[in-house]
Structure formats: C-alpha cells, structure tokens
Amino acid sequence: MRVYFDNAATTPLDPIVIEAMTKVMQENFGNPSSIHREGRTSRSIIEKARKTVANCINASIGEIFFTSGGTESSNMALKCAVRDLGVQRIITSRMEHHCVLHTVESLEKTHGITLDFVDIDSCGRINYAQLTDLLSSSDKKTLVSLMHANNEVGTVMNMEKISQICQTHNALFHSDTVQTMGHFPIDVEATKINFLTGAAHKFHGPKGVGFIYINGETQIKPYIDGGAQERNMRGGTENFYGIVGIAKALEMAVEKMDEKRTHIDGLRQYLKDQLTEHFEDIQFNGCQENYLYTVLSVSFPPSPKADMMMLNLDIAGISASGGSACSSGAEKGSHVLESINAPTDRKTIRFSFSHFNKKEEVDFLIEKLKTIIAIKKAATV
Ligand SMILES: Cc1ncc(COP(=O)(O)O)c(C=O)c1O
Image (cartoon, rainbow, N blue to C red; front, side):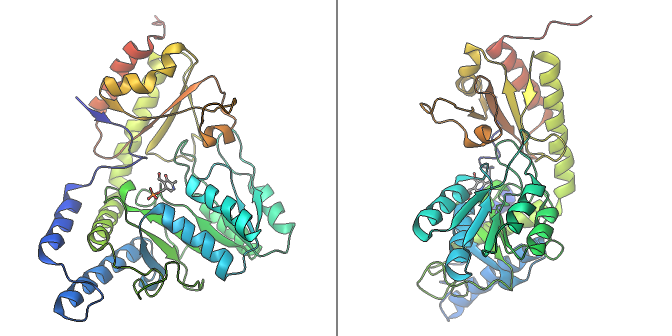
C-alpha cells in the first residue's frame, strides 16, 4: 500500500482533467495568436477557460491572466506594484512562502523599498492591530502582502479584515491564495483585493500553470515583454493545454467544494484524534480554529526516532513532508516554524490531504507510526 499525504506540496491530476487536456492535445494544435481557423479555435478555448476561472472567483474575464504558477504570479504582483504603481513600502509577514519573501527582499535591495513585517503569534495568526498601526505610521504608498493560508502550519488569515484595513489606509493588497484556491470560496466582488494568485497543481490540475487576478482598477504594465499574449501583459505562446487543465480543475474543485471539504476535514480530525489517543505528547502546529482543512501539522516530542521519521514513513509507504525550527543555522530549518517560535527540539511532520484519501489510509499511517516512533500511550483502563 502506498499512501500520499503530501497534497499541500502537489496534488495528483484528476482523471477528468487529464481527459479534458488529452482531448485538446489530440484535436487542437493551432497557435492561439494565429488568425486562421486552427488558431481561432485555440484562442476560443483559452478564452472559455479564462471565463471559467473568472466565474470561480466572481471576477471579470479581463482580470484573469494565465501564468506559470504561484511563484510567477506573486513575482508579477509585487514587482509590477513597485515598478508601475509607485509602491515604496511593503508590509508582509515572516511566514510567507519564499516566492513572496525572496521577492520582497530583492525589491528592498534593488528598488530601495521599505520592508516591514507584521507580528505573528505562536499559532501563525497575524497581529491585525499592529498592521493598522504600521499602516497609520507612514504616508508612503504601501502594499500589504499576506497569504490567505499558510502552507506549512495551515493557519488561515482573515482576508476580509485585512482588505478592510487596507482600504481604510489606502494601501494595496496582494494575497498568496495558492493553498486556498479551489478549497475555500473566494469572491473578489465581496472582498476587495488588488492581486491574488492560483496554481493548478494544488487543486488536481497540471503543474507549471497558474493565474493571477488583477483587479480591473489596478493598471500595471507588461510583466514579460514580447508578443501581445495575455492582453499584452505576458508575452510568449500560452501554455494552451495547461490552461485547459487549470480551468477544468478549478471548475470541479469549486463545484464540489463543500462535499470535498466535509470528507477531507473529517479525515484531518480523525488523524488528530487517533494521534492524540495513541501517542504521548503530540502537539499540533498552527491555529486550530481557523485552519486549512487540507493540512495537519503535527509536532512530535524529541527522540532519536523522530529525526528519522520522514525517511521511515517513506520506507513504510507513506509520503508526507517534514520540517523543524532550526536555531543553530547549521541546518536549514523551516522559516515558517521559526517564525512561530516552534520549539527547536521537536520534529514536525505535515500531513496534507485531498478528497482522494481514505480513512483506511489514516489507519495504515497510525499502525506504521506505532512501529516507527515506538512511544505509544499507556493504555488507560
Ligand atoms: C503558499 C504557496 N505559495 C506559492 C507556492 C508556489 O507555487 P508554484 O509551485 O505554482 O510556483 C506554493 C507552492 O508550494 C505555496 O504553497
């Protein structure tokens, strides 16, 4: 038996997505920029996909731009905001994905922007009052970049609240929604936001394709110079098959969101209960009230066995992700665990789920863990 509990890293392609992509691979090869029939057919398939994606988040079609994924989308938002919108200051958090953190650090070096970090607590929640104070403290044109849900510990931020604070202070708002797109309802009409991002491979679509939503009132210049693709914003022949895949995958994710959520959240809770029942001193990272239901970040007590856990799980047939907060600097630890001050001697394993996972797989994991960590809870009578 092989169990895949690393869906926050990437998800398997849905067979229906493969079918939709294969159909266009077999039937359509025209360059979407060509004006003959083959080209026009490809163009209309791309525009249909754009409409599907736009509908899923209640955006207009003119606000959706296809990219190569989450990293490119966030780079585009942050770099174009500084270059084209006069942003002189960025407020973000230390638990953002590297596609945001490394980009803002680079903008600080190359463009001299001011960088401020909002405090986060030990559960990964941002300090909203301090965000307000930071915004009140300067007249510089500011962009706030805060992720919707953290990919390692699963804490979900209050997008509505951040959006309100940004509006009150006339700040731009970018959110990395890579982990929540297709898993949580997102409505850009209801929640005002300038930029948000999606990556198909996090919701059973293909890798190497994503999109950026840019609010219609937010006017930026081309990110990739070249042809007139993506309404001049991103030159280069489109990832045609990928675009078909992302639209199909997102449409399916949104259509059955509640049903899938109930199933996945049930598995997550079951794993939590089983771990607490069978093992000593198990803790859970991240906020357990507002959480990404696809992620359970488990903190195991220090032991020599815990250090080898990831490898032993893999050998036992289970794929998950590992991490630890590192204080020495010798080994590269998780910047997210460090940002929430997770104890450096404990071992974190992130189990992340999809609707393809089953309860029996959780049982299998628990059985394997009993032999791997060998610190079972004494049976209570
Ligand atoms: C929160 C978050 N942002 C961005 C990314 C990067 O997305 P991509 O792999 O599509 O570039 C990831 C992927 O791990 C992620 O989890």
